[in-house]
Image 1: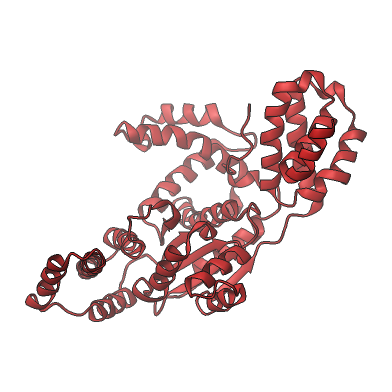
Image 2 (image 1 turned 90 degrees about the vertical axis):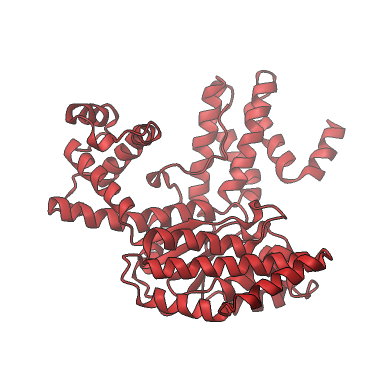
Length: 420
């Protein structure tokens, strides 16, 4: 049985015509000069509207710009000269598994014998792709990974666990990006900054647990060593990032599904983004359901009965926000029909219903409930189970109708179940 909640694996599998949106957003990030101060942007939309998939597309296009640079440098040709760029990239996505397998075995696929490389490419080549284009794309992709212009970090505070300090974790991620891409003096300062934050976290935790001796010892360490203040260290780091000659334009920190966190995590995260972890060249890309996250923010600032206060507070932090439009009804209908046909064929049920009945169910029932791709995924995951269990003794469209009511309107389903 196919799981319909798997993320879109390849950029050209987009069915909602969002590639241009993603490309424009990626271009804006790539061209943005935030050397003097950080920046916070947000993608908002209802749960299941495709925010995570759209972020994957944005990341792809950010990286693709760097690949295009090396491709042109190596071949003196631009991407526009490639006979079929989508086919070339799709072929590369396929052979990437072989490349990654070689890396796992501590071997270098790029240094393999030419005939072996060509055979691997030929075995996976998409119609319309040229083997030389694929090979040149592969080389440019490796150079782009080795010499990036953006350090991209995916940060999930909701997955850290209650015992993990969010501020410390963000600074740790920034530290890794800096240590890989910036000068030694920046590395040393960010290391001291992280130590200071760790020490502060230790002392406040000890104090909250009543371990006074540990707290006093930590305070003694601060004064005995006559360390710079945390603000002095941060100021030095900011100046160093501002004046660095590194190829890295931005450190992009992606924080998805923010509506999953609780009010305590929300308070700490916002404090970090606007305070300790707000630095030059650091770009935060947040994603969340506007209503849900505004409510969490309101609770974190002790305005739990007034979500609008949470929204107003967010506006002081997020400098650019863009809501993802809901998919066009025609696109949702197309996805619905494709997935349904696939399921019916898999269970030999296509001959047991008609296009007219399917269209009726979509128009009058499912389209009223399913507004996002995730809604359809929920429906088809349940329908796949139902058709496997009772598909042989039910009419497919009737079973689909009952499954939709069960998934989207369970109270009504219970009433039907008691009557039928």
